[in-house]
Image (cartoon, rainbow, N blue to C red; front, top):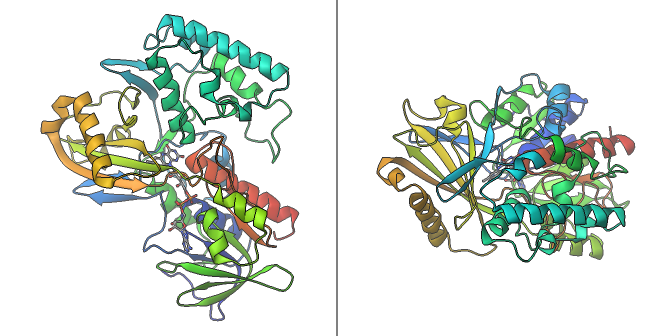
Length: 452
Ligand SMILES: Cc1cc2nc3c(=O)[nH]c(=O)nc-3n(C[C@H](O)[C@H](O)[C@H](O)COP(=O)(O)OP(=O)(O)OC[C@H]3O[C@@H](n4cnc5c(N)ncnc54)[C@H](O)[C@@H]3O)c2cc1C
């Protein structure tokens, strides 16, 4: 894919990687008047924000709920830079499944008190843990160093333990043993700047009392590719060039340690600024002279691995408008019937469901697939005879797990005019929302450094 060729191979800005964070960066920068080249190693753009056809079904690269959509970072970027915006459908409720029991996720303390999947005794014990946390906060304890497992009372049941372990994997990509408590009570305030606000936990604690659920979460009609397509359609004419099948193999710097060019197997390009959206931990292979402590930090980043099984079903098995969290399955499973949001994603009368699981760091793909499919069939045996299509995806939803024993990169790098964006560059929220936060921060830093 190539749009608008520049003859002299010189650009204001080169964006490396055409996932959502690279594309959002390119859109914002081109709308701000810059000539931008995007280099993507794959044959298509979108990274893990794509949809494609399989046997008449339209599957996404993993089932997605787009969070903080009313007033979060993606909304800010859409309002400012998109010419066309996707049509979003409410994501509905999150249901928690344990065995045959299915109940809406308890978003508020009021719901928590009547959430029967968790034994009553545990619910009360967990209220005590919550008050213990308030006490720790009031004593100035840093809750980003305390794990969920640390604050759970020892006497709680295995169901309650699995519930919190599930949430830790779901929200942070890690087990509750290394999931920091702070992530569950961080401030939802979108307009905060680089530093957390002076009352970082106030937003979440307030939410605990009054939350009505995932009201600001939505799904884009046509699949998540619609978001990517809207970005592509919004690029200003003649200011963005995209080259696919071109892997960046090196970044060049000047004597003053500023970025001056980017090379691939085929070409060398000149630029004043580069935005890198691949794995931050790959940077030391692309550029020489990075400070040792910077490189060491990047090497401590742990990525998240996921397996999604897409099933096309000849019958509507999931009738709720929402998704299911299977807290007692092994592996933990998130079931999302995407065709309930947009029937056009499946052939008439059929249902498309994505079952997403988190994979361990090391795994055997064939065994992992079999185990995950067995879980689906054990949970709902009737499904087996109604399977019309099976499609597997092993993908990396987030380039950095948010855990006590791993690290994050940063938008700002030690190289002048080299910035990184993506889910390992910003420690806030998750997935596409996190990627969008990183892009907003990149733009802010560029403005402060007079790149913009
Ligand atoms: C199962 C699953 C469920 C998910 N659920 C949700 C959800 O509910 N909500 C949500 O918001 N998000 C969700 N996500 C995550 C979300 O899709 C990703 O976090 C987001 O799309 C990542 O975007 P990115 O641009 O940071 O990274 P990527 O999409 O990984 O893009 C990086 C791009 O850079 C390219 N690249 C890398 N190195 C080079 C190089 N050297 N040269 C050229 N190109 C290079 C890659 O090929 C890729 O295209 C989910 C993902 C999965 C897999």
